[in-house]
Length: 339
Ligand SMILES: Cc1ncc(COP(=O)(O)O)c(C=O)c1O
Image 1 (cartoon, rainbow, N blue to C red):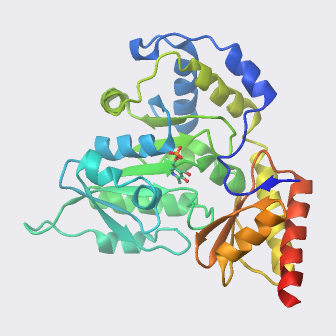
Image 2 (cartoon, rainbow, N blue to C red):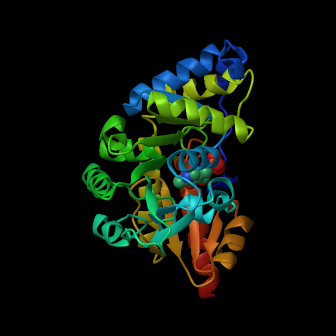
């Protein structure tokens, strides 16, 4: 048995999703003629309480479009120190938008509004001027932690006071919504531009939707074209996302339950683990690479995100049996180390 806990991006489209894709009504989306994408964009915008949506191939492109849309070259973007655009987007903000990043360390990836206020520098000829606050919900490197509605509102208020635009990287906003029961539109409310991903917990092969005002969406469409993200009969992909909205959102509760069960089992076995709020479990250990290799030898795939940190992620393609198998493999590692 192989259990792949490396990421929630490793899921394969289900048969039902593939059928929905095969049957999708399509047209040339660069001409604005793809009915499936139009349906997806307006549905997601309505869910997030925004005017309009734009389909893009990846979360990375969505983040980069948002930053380009909300800044000018030479500006400063404030974000948490482990935020995705800083750690994992190949320097895109510098290249695509010409901005600098001001990193504010948070507790488990969560920004403290007071720290953001303190990071906003006053106008001065020496300073890159901060113009944008970008927030990640849930926070990937924080361990899938949730920016609650009250924290999101407080961050939005600080940004408004300081005259900053606001962006929400909601790659896993679905998980925050399911974990807290807070409506998506409320979690998105404090932010000008919000993007959500379909290729993580929702199990689609490709796709993000970026939502904002009607005026901003026309500019976002132009930036997408510049980046090569204008696609033709992309309704085939949009149909997978529509299918995911119908069938894969509520079930995220199963991923959260399994992640919690996994973490509790590991804790009980003596591993150093934080109990997860959503679907990401981080294990602290002396040699993460050795643990990952030991797990792989026992049919469990995991990632070493640092020399002392292993990440395990629950998703659509992991069931209860997979979690039991993973716990067995960790137990086996412990016993092998004790011998
Ligand atoms: C929080 C967050 N934002 C953005 C992305 C980028 O998404 P993509 O891999 O679709 O470019 C990821 C990817 O894992 C992510 O975790």
